[in-house]
Length: 267
Image (tube, rainbow, N blue to C red; front, side):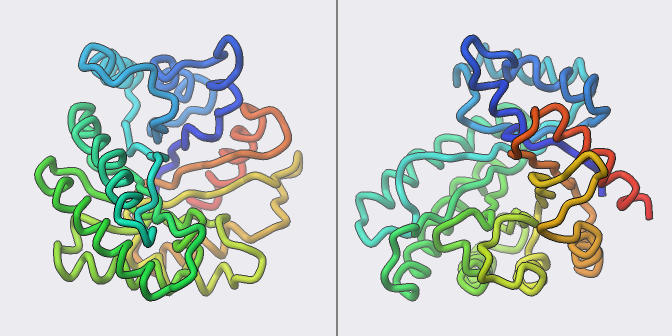
């Protein structure tokens, strides 16, 4: 596994007024400050979607020697919603980022499951499965994979997440859709290690949350070594994306995450 950085970790810098960091500066910033050579982009930080801007972003990554790992997309519309109009809105909005990923040379996007207000799990699973199959159709045309993260809504239930992804893999192939497994995004009622074991065999990407990490590199909410052991048992060997959204200054939080995780990867 290789360490990368999820752009959301620096959202306070991207969102400051004026911005302390732009997406065009993100590749070199990540290399220089953290010594990392992979980054995950977030669609909300794009200043433009036009080809000239995308070309500048791709050139910035090339100059920095930084891989563009994926685009984490958060868009309007709910891919699990009972109302077809909401699902169609989600499909249009998420689907629009697939050709953008292709233009940037990125081979995966993250789409949210939706389903935050679900009342019927079986119906939400069926709706979500149909939505991800349709996204997979678009992804297949562009050579871009579709990942579902355990990122609230329907995907907070690992059984539902596995059910949707397994169905889409059965219809579209295991190479086009998979999980973005986040170590931290489980509610307190969920056994995170059991849940991780369920989704990790489907993983195409992984987030290592380091929100609660302190100066001594202690992370009390969960054991990163145990999570990494599960990933290795499932033969995952891709990017391990650091994601920080804690209380201390973002650069400090990410630096602590790097110092925590590098020895664990080398072990």
